[in-house]
Image 1: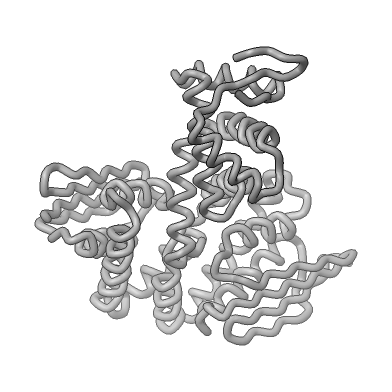
Image 2 (image 1 turned 60 degrees about the vertical axis):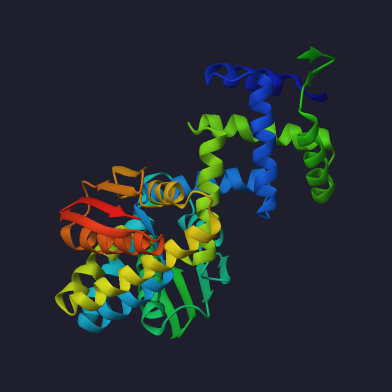
Length: 186
Length: 190
């Protein structure tokens, strides 16, 4: 037997009852889950947090696709219709930023950085620095294709625009994006 | 459940306790803290409206995507790009989705004891643009049904090719596939 905080044990007891489990059964399921996710190299808290975040990403109408498909599809689309594809990515960036704002998120840039750090598995280097009205974005990913880098850069430009920032500096090379922006009207 | 001062004693099976002890040592926390943390997270998961089993499935699928190289993309952008590609070489694009599916099928076959069920979870938990997903094993047959109210015909065709590829990777041969806008019905045989 193990000691657990009174309020937590009561809450779990109620949940177990509602879900048709015994407290013993539910608790043991739970510990099994903790052990399972630990085997995947994360804590239960991290797993639950990323689960919560995944729901937000889902609600923002993102689709999870395989990288190889994404890069190849992006390359073909970019080649077929350069300007329209760039516009589609830019518009998507604006839309995502405005969605954050509409939901009352005070700092959409920080919120997006948080999501990108959890789910941007193809982006090992993400850095966002904010200083007053200036913001600096740095994306590093050796896995990005050349065309995908250009499209993702356009998405970020749209995102900054939708968040109320105007781009002042932009450098794009394969797998490498640097963006600096300043709050509009300042 | 025995009651103490501000604490309650809860029963845990012995084998789990041993495994949990190892985890708590690895994480550098006491066993009580680990259990308390798990209880806290269970309350949170319940508030999100899911069970711990659904969360475990979800996490497994997400981890698989991480290994396979998954990327989040705005749905509108993906649909737009597919439309652009279809205007060009449709056969090449279909081959791309099929081959990726086949590769994924091979991976699922190696990683999961029941790869057909795993593929079902894979679609349910990651293709949020699908309103209904049904992947059923009946004897040597597999039936797949995907319904979406938002997918256009181009995206549906590509997903159908991907599903065919997965089936092939799982050693099934597609016998029949019907594709309509937002609807895929596929039958495959071992």
